[in-house]
Image 1 (cartoon, helix red, strand yellow):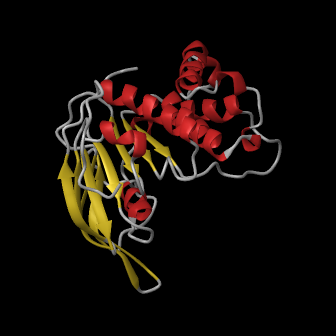
Image 2 (spheres, helix red, strand yellow):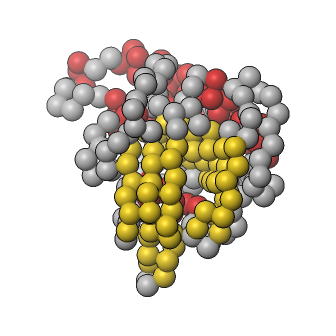
Length: 249
């Protein structure tokens, strides 16, 4: 995996961010800067606006006020999406023939292909190797040919993480990756993120509680009623030293 290059602009930033829905403020006055190499946990109770915040950072939810930037560009003008790996809360349900685990993970390589270049000229060996590494990292190599939608919730979450890993991005954004996930899958996720942190990748994750992910976190942001109510800088390290956070456990 390539290490991220130095950038003057941070990977993700929001200034005065506000999101409104049905006349109600979901986010209000959010200021957030995610630096390269951060492992940032966004904490808070249900309805605090955690998922909305990470989606707004990526331009998936429109802002009513303020601005958000990805490597210094507003989402509408940002083109280097191969640098961003987004892991949603659940595997999308699609029609037609069910996709295998390997097919879902392989779809994470699409963003790395040069626009307009025929598939014949892409590096298929590199694609296969990246997919194999991602499957091994999340412990699903033996399930590669299984239908992804027949897996447990925790295994499906690991498939989504593998899809992001296969794209070899610089930034990983995970929306509640441990929600409803069994202990084994949480441990596999922690191991995968440990490797990313050790490689200098930037990680933003939404969580109710950190569990085995806590030692990896370098910063926490706690939301309440759509506003930042507390921030903490921890002293976690990729080598696995224990860390404490100021967010709820």
